[in-house]
Image (cartoon, rainbow, N blue to C red; front, top):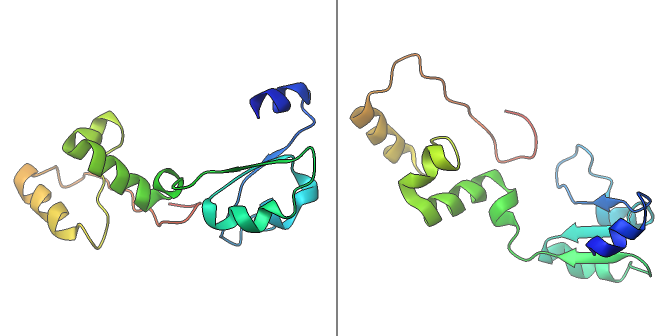
Length: 127
């Protein structure tokens, strides 16, 4: 696929998928606007019937483990445990599931009262 994109000299477009309302009319819904399409398995099969040469579809099963904020945190915590904090990502807790763990960490570590925490929803944009 990289070869085909490189040969296009900037004419090919890579598009993704979003489930939010912002930029939602793209990807599989407008096949005339893309040449290479990366998607998750649940959208792959519905997209394949719309594809004509020279377009390409790359289905990435399990990619939500890296593309959704909540799943990314769970994936990194599962793989690296406490070592993930600071090395790969800032100290992160999934709420409400890890509220008890977060409270225990606060009691044990006693961070300064002015410590700032970012609250991020599991959506593509915004803090």
